[in-house]
Image (tube, rainbow, N blue to C red):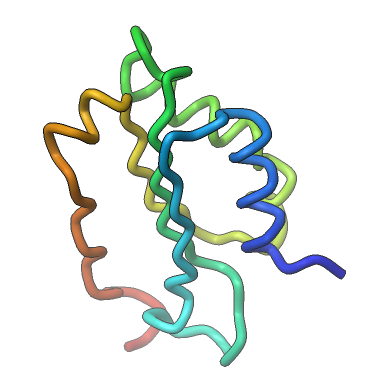
Length: 103
């Protein structure tokens, strides 16, 4: 069976044809069993985001992975940018420490 991370990468690349994309499995930062694929930080830089508000960009990503969100994925940290925004920003913030799950 294909890993959750590979499924995310494939779907995002096919749908958004990104200039840059990065999917980081951050499950190890949370109170989950070793080897889990439940928490991801996703960065997608795509021309398909031109003219779209942040909420609409996120809705597009959520729609693309809805089946995974109803199953193995518990949380997504989304960073969706146009190429121009990426050039101006140039980086993605670190994710905050987990505050839940009994840690």
